[in-house]
Amino acid sequence: MARETVEVIGASAASPEAVWCIASDFCGAWHPAIATIHAERDERGALVRAFTVDGEDTVYREQLTWLSDSDRTLAYTHLQGIVGAEAYDGRIAISAGDGGGSSVRWSARVEAASPRLQVICEGTKAIFEAGIAALSETALATRAAEQPGPLPAPAATRDIVIDGDPRLALTATPDGDGPLCLFLHGIGGSRGNWLPQLGAVGGVTRAAALDLRGYGGSALGRHPSTVEDYCDDILRVKEDLGADRLVLVGLSYGSWIATSFAMRHPGMLAGLVLSGGCTGMSEASLEEREAFRVSRKVPLDAGQTPADFAPAVVKVLAGPNASDAVKKQLLNSMAEIPAATYRDALVCFTNPSGRFDFSRLTMPVLMMTGEHDRLAPPTEIRGVAERILAQAARPNVRYETIADAGHVCNLEQPDAYNRILLEFLSGLAA
Image (cartoon, rainbow, N blue to C red):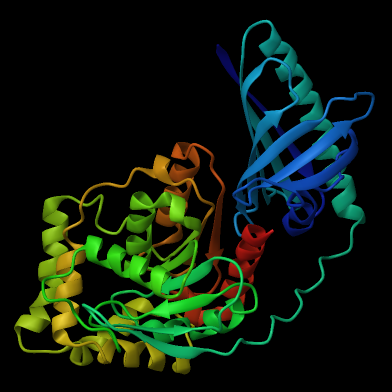
């Protein structure tokens, strides 16, 4: 099979925000060739558009594989309709124009046998040119997007203790339908860091935030923790709360644990949400891992506790405009960590079982990180998201940069974080 890339770049006098408002409507009828179009969902919740074009009876289907409102990009793959196409992957990117307005880049990678490949590419180019012209015209004639509506009222929560070895403590919303959305905090956090998300998510699906081993109301195990132990704890929570499937939501260390679980039990997950991290130290060299562990053990070996160096940690975690209330919450959660728990987490984190195989991620994936995150900057997390898009067998990936937030982006910008999370969960529920 031969391969070819088609790319058309156009300009619009409309702002990037106005153009993206139109282009991001994956199932909208804004393209002039569209005769009919409607939205579908596959069994994983991935968004599919089914459409016909003027003068044809053929039904075309394309699945959304990538979405980023913050980057103003989307990608899709052809499922049905183009005769002779073995593979067809399209991408739209909207950016600011050099002299004002917008630049629209629309491309597709096509695989087909010759001479059919040339016919498909010629037709694609014409479709892109007409589409970019329509985007520009429609954006100029469209009013600014409405402000988002209010978030749902917070759901009630309750505390739960799961007895066993070790004891596990959670805060959960009342039982309900749908998968269990389980929140996993970072090395310097606690389940309390997720309270704004628990309240918001509780109106969509069941939710719970877990204190990891040794944190808060959860006890350390009888031996040093491994990532397999954390995965077993997730399974215990799933069984105790009677959940058929899970949506794991992690932050930093919790994201690494969530991805580790996804590698081992992909069929148990309805979705995977990774904030401020993903790969952890799984791709670091032995020297890098050892340097990380030793540098963070130095104050502990000198007799300090996490409470002693919590102020310095908060300066790294918080964004430049974090409120005093957020800084205080970060300080308190860090200060409450026992020294033994902190040591235990450091050893586990710096002894990963191996690199991740992103082809195993069969569930929808949402990745977010703060604009000012020093530990997991947008360039790094966006790059991992792009790798998942490239390697997953049936990718369904969303990436977002949370504006004006540091590492703990869910605390600094809870409304922005919750809106994106609720959109993702609503798609799964649909």
